[in-house]
Length: 144
Image (tube, rainbow, N blue to C red; front, side, top):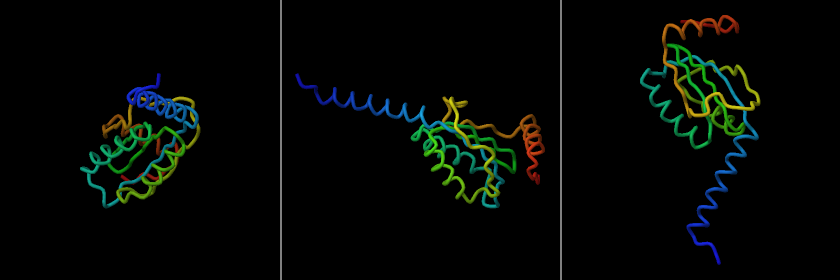
């Protein structure tokens, strides 16, 4: 008995899911960068950045976190190395930030933000103190 169209479609869908899962596990990497907002940046851009990041990251099985602190961004991305590189090259071309510096890039064995296509930490006093400490520990310029 030959399988029906629905059954074939279901099996193909399961195979696609399995292939994505294998890719998800085999080339898992992280990338962390910091940047400074540019003159072109408006506070209202955060919503747009998050909306696009959530859609694009979900399509490519990328997860991560974006932290914004008045004048700076720190972003952590995790996923397939090739996809991370593609996304990062697009991020680097965005005119809303400058002084983009890669802090870490390496292979990982598991995700920290598995269930978040893009978590967001808005500015607050506690995180600002952590942010200040990060810049001091890493000898990075801070010009607030």
